[in-house]
Image (cartoon, rainbow, N blue to C red; front, side, top):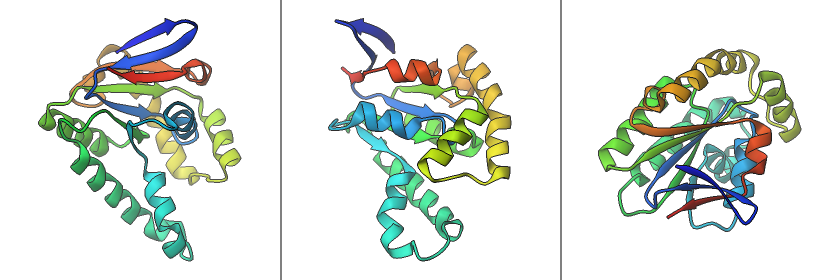
Length: 189
C-alpha cells in the first residue's frame, strides 16, 4: 500500500487483487468514504447496508432488531463466497470490533491467496455518535460502548502489527476523519 500525491490528488494504491477492509466504529464515516471514493468504480464494495436496503421493502415493517442477524448472516456469506482470486479488488465495510468477523475475513483472504490491507478511520466516540444521529441510524448504547471500548486497542495493534488485528493483513493505514476526507482516490493496479 502506498499513499501518493500525484498532481495534487491524494490517492492510495493497492495491488490489483487486494482486499481492503475499511474499518471504524459506527458513525466514523466509512459509508461516506465509500460513497465519495468508489462511486462509479468497478471495485467490488461489500457493505451490510446494501443487504439491509434490499430487504427493507419486504422486512421493513418489522423492527430492524428482529432481522438484523439475518442481514449480517447474508452479508458475511456473500462476502466470503465472493472473495476469490481473479475477481479483482474488493473493499469490505466492517467495524472490525468483532473478533470472529476479523478472523473469518483473514482466514478467507489467506485461503484465496489474496493480499489483505486495513484502512482504519480513527474517530472519537462522541464524533461517531454525532455521525450516527446525522445519518438517522443510531446504534444501541450498549453496543456502541462495546465498539468504543475495543477500538483503541485495535488501532494500537494495527499500527505495530496489522496481522494481529485481521490475520494475514500486510498493512494498516490509520486515518483521522480529516485525513480520510483528503483521500481522493483508491487505485488498484
